[in-house]
Image (cartoon, rainbow, N blue to C red; front, top):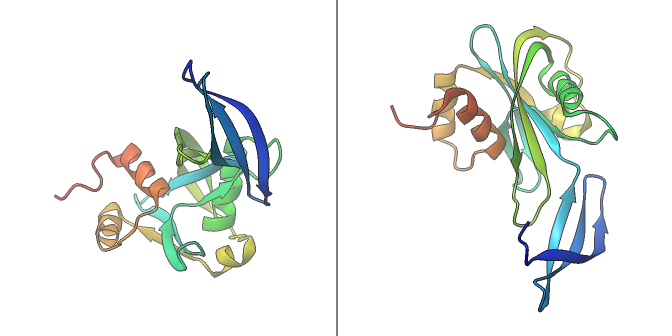
Length: 182
């Protein structure tokens, strides 16, 4: 935190099921200014890789873009007190229909620190066992599951105008220069 800037007041603007919006008053010691901030409990995601080296993905409708988006399984920390590992295990089962014996945390990432407090915790999931998929909500129920080799995924992403940042970060953490042209 900057020694000269600090939040001196907050006022709620919106409360929703997934996030809230508040106006924060910030002071630099001489003057104050306001910023609207989305507050979020955080989220988790999993880059699942099966024994054949294929990456588990879902193609899911996302209303902000009114389009289907290729993603790795992810979800909000919406169960009070739930640890990120337990949440990502639940999401992997619900969305992809598998369980993992080996989990590695790839990192915690600020989604958009200029206006949102959401932190995404990304895990790698390996040693997979397929289970019955248990999608929650209409978007997950309509989503399709894909297992793509790294080469096939790279080719698919090169033809996509917009790429989900969580997928991109996870791929870079595991494969390094994933998006570089060969």
